[in-house]
Length: 334
Image (cartoon, rainbow, N blue to C red; front, top):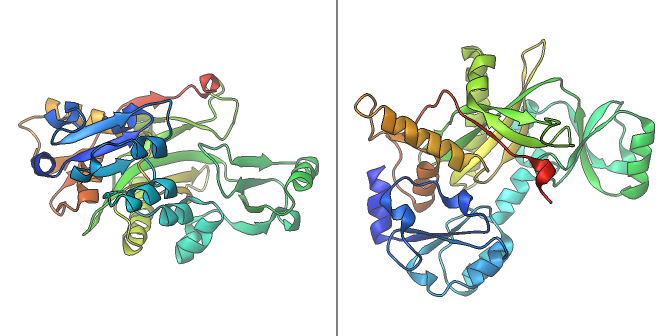
């Protein structure tokens, strides 16, 4: 996307992150420019928090700041120093991602969720078995399958007044994708099969441990993909109406037997798979040079950054991919 790289030459952006891989999504020459030079640069240190890294910036007034996930502390730091932060408001991201607050935010779109109830855990009226979710949790850590009264009773003893969302247990496969909200429209991305609970990679049956784009194509019919994309688009349009820009993701489960699609999660942020998918898309663009419209085909990361800086994406489309697989061994994460 030449417009983006031309923009960065005159309007530099610095991506600040603990994990450098999250920022390595550009295929152009600006990707390797050091901090302080025009273009796109990365500030990274795994031993410091994002807030600490942002606070340590020496001359960011010449560049806009971008972080992985909206953060109130970073917002306050940038506001106090009059720095431009590209991320949408953290308050909106929190409202959209919280499992309890999300229900109210979704409004009529909550009909796409599995049947559910939200309230104080001690007041839970739901028949067993059910899926319990705290308002916050990372990669499935805040989700539990409650199958016995003993399990429920133990949790009530510990957290009687904590708000929860409980939902009907759905037996099915989960799929996810990376999408982009632009100033004019929603770009719906490639669907991947969400690798969840693999015992070789995690001890948590609800933990997300990877993505498989090829398997999604094998498992989903064209009608399935159309249903999925309709839900993803509706979520994106609601995000746009709320003032969102850039990347967001949805997790959708297809129920075995009925084939019904249920919205499971909305991620108001750049997901962990964006850079990996963008690298697959860059390879696809290189391999098909001369056979696809290179001017209209963009990667997820390029579209994310372009949307955040306000570039016109009305004639762009996300590059399609048909294979690729990434996994994370969460057993080795301390």
